[in-house]
Length: 186
Image 1 (cartoon, rainbow, N blue to C red):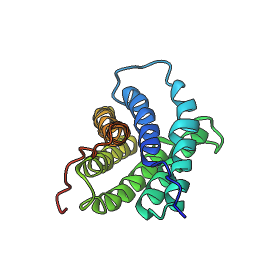
Image 2 (tube, rainbow, N blue to C red):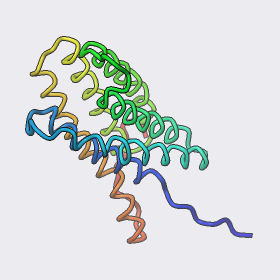
Image 3 (cartoon, one colour):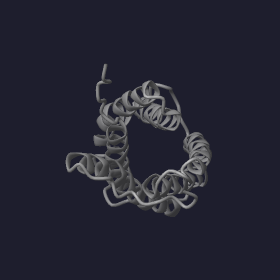
Image 4 (cartoon, rainbow, N blue to C red):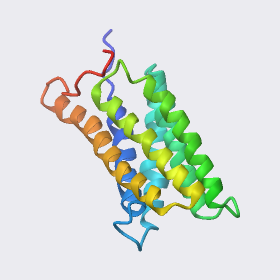
């Protein structure tokens, strides 16, 4: 018996993460100031649901890193969506800052796990933990400059994540190896 070929869930998770991060980061950077509610649908479905699904599929495929990363960031986007809707009641900027710093710590630890993967994941997680810390400290201290810096770093994070995911799709369609580069310790 031959095993049925399964699709790689990583490009879906990375694309959902990248698009949602790009849109929110545009607001965090101060490039757009009105209409930020547009992020909510993305957070619920593409950033949230799509990543949760990608995480479950990574779990089913035996990829612990992919499972933990996609499921965690999918849950982050669902938290963002519900928090923005006010489901959890009165949320302060300092409370949000604490959550963002906690995600920064998580992401820093996950970044260490990318040291032997590929340059795409390494760069995405490097930029992401910096983004979380900038946004978190900016929220805790009500420092708009740090929030804007986090927004710009988030835009770079989204570009890195999109490249990492979509180069896999294009490479597979061309029957080529994805040009993701070598991580520092690989």
